[in-house]
Length: 82
Image (cartoon, helix red, strand yellow):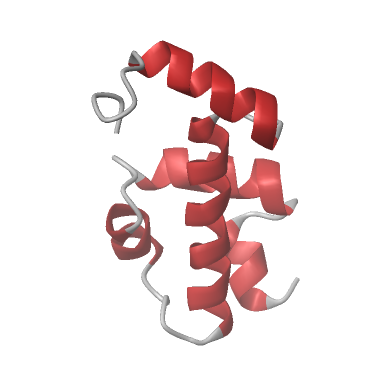
């Protein structure tokens, strides 16, 4: 995309942040965590290690930390309804 519009990647990131209000990395993170919560709600994610890898996290600890920071509960608490 940057070649199509003759923009470097950093310029594109700044424009994204300006018009969306957050950087692209934050939007991707929120999208992944929303997908995680939806999978848990639908009963499709009983194995959190598998889910974290499926969503692109390198390890379950990083996934759990992000999930708790955004959702307010750990994935285990979310799954149990606590």
